[in-house]
Amino acid sequence: MITASLSPNTEFDDVFIAVKTFSMPWLWKKGDAILAVEEWFRSYFNVETAVLFSSGRMAEMAILQSFKIGKGDEVLVQAFTCVAVPNSVLWAGARPVFVDIDASGNIDVGDAQQKVTPQTKAMIVQHTFGIAADIKAIVDFCTLHNLILIEDCAHSLGMRVGGKLLGTFADAAFFSFGRDKVISSVWGGIAIINNSKPKESRRLSTLKDSRHFPSYTFIAKQLLHPLLFFVSMPLYRVGIGKVFIAIFRALSLISLPIFPIEYKGGMPKELVTRYPNAFARLILNQLKKLDRYTRMRSETTDGYKTIIGKSNKIKTFKTPFGATYLRFPILVSDKSTLIRDAKKDGILLGNWYGHVIDPKGVSFESIGYIKGSCPKAEEVSKHILNLPTRLTEKERARVYSFLLRHV
View 1 (spheres, rainbow, N blue to C red):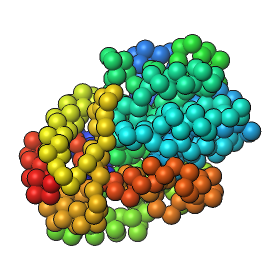
View 2 (view 1 turned 60 degrees about the vertical axis):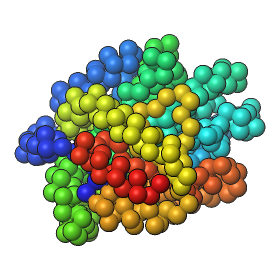
View 3 (view 1 turned 90 degrees about the vertical axis):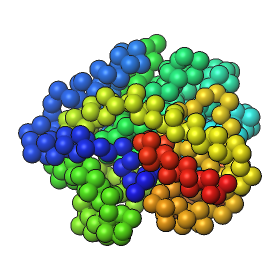
View 4 (view 1 turned 180 degrees about the horizontal axis):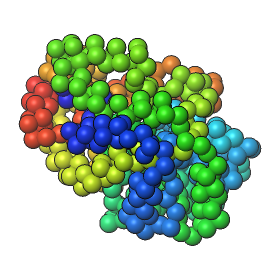
């Protein structure tokens, strides 16, 4: 089964490392892998400070806290996003202010200009699906209004604009290692801070040091995740794999990517923890494959662009500033039919962001989103689907064949 969302990065070597680590519980919490991951990010982004956290959203919150953004402050975030982004603002004590999107699916500086106030202290720019936002205009906007700029690079690790890595244009940036991100350790994230911000860097490190490691039960569950999906996905198309996943979830062997408490702006206690060494061992192996994964995604999307460029039925976002697609977004009139037909062909399409603030069931009142305030984002969410991009040549041919029959 080809998928954009159910652990699409997992390969046999990842499963081997997960199983090997599972058998060595003395390495689950503390160990050298943590320092190795942080050093990789310091070197790659040429920064002095890179700090691991339990998730991308906790890394985001830690950055806000490091810049002393909290009660009474406003933070500009885009609509057409996951609830994790505005939740982190709420957890820091500040108020998210939602900004509409432009034709690239990223934050619209023009709309931001209408929503900035004297209480606005920061902007979080999300490079949606790995499509670069208009970072020059955003930097100029933040400079004009004296705002802290934070890059959300959950979808864009390794991507460059004008030869410069995304994540280095801002005062700080965060990355996610969730199960369906560029690289994955099931949970986890990292924050980096610009070298010109030494006080904030010290605060960031202190925040990590103040937290305890997650329980052995939580760590064990995540180490099982690569194995469970590696076994289930080949059998998904015949129904057995889907049953396996349902059973694993019923037995609480698989964690949900969003905890129920988060739908109403709450903070899960499971995430107020440090990033453990067991997860770092997984992500170190994934980092070795980053360049290969990036090439695979680029090669896949070249084909998508050619096919969709000739289509009257399917559209996509504009990419004026470059992209290395984590997922390739398409806009269609009949989502349900395309999802059904794709599943028959053994392809599970992604649904980021099928709701203006994903996932379905998020309480707009709890997170401060006012319906109708971001009409472009609301309209796009009705039509969006995502195609997988980290595909082998054989998988690519299958997805291309499916697309060609529906354009």
